[in-house]
Image (cartoon, rainbow, N blue to C red):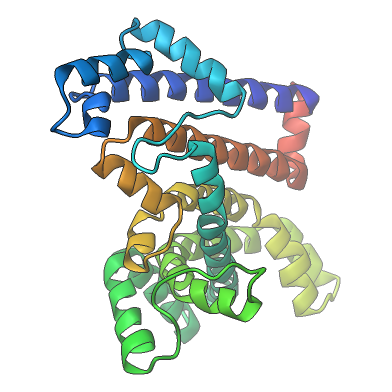
Length: 318
């Protein structure tokens, strides 16, 4: 058990190290001079050269990388060219927005996926099953930007029920906070529910075919206990893994939704960094998002191992 956790920690550290190398060197060799971008096109060559040296960009790339890596360990990601602020501060300011809509989106997606996935498996080939399959196909087929625009037109413009832009912190107003994240979270949830519903349905169908389900029915247990305690518990491993992967993906994949709804989250920061070639900001964002993905994946893997006795016994046997 402990050896498995240590192995996962080691692999996570290796992943972060490899990503740091790729992120730094790929972004640094992209054409363009950061000093020129900061000073503008009217800057003199002498001023550009002076700033270039002050930023340490005249040193060999490996020295720049080692210095950058050392600062990362101190949680100092440098200063953004565009915003003129610390990258760490910018990320910390954007985290509540992205994490709020991502987590709320997963809550909605999990609720719908488990509800209809279980019913679809229990009542296979029924109207409920066909309806659930339709949700799978729609969730996977409809582009998120189109869903976002439709929701804005109907809920924000036509009926004026919900705000279509901006973010209200939860400490300022809980009601305002929920209203500001509902539509963007709904767009994200629709995009994720199809995959999760399909996994829940297939896992439940597989669980219902197991021998222990026949034993539970023979014992005369009520339907609720059979489906919830036995079938669902045996079908949780794959859905939980997918939930972790989807949540990790949403942590850095909200660019479209945050742009549509004008939310000041990590996605908007990524877009700004790319548009203005803000290398320092982009490097910090890539490393932060990668770290979040690795941490979530690690937690989910460990949790699934605890939940599934077969996986746990397998690693203990090793």
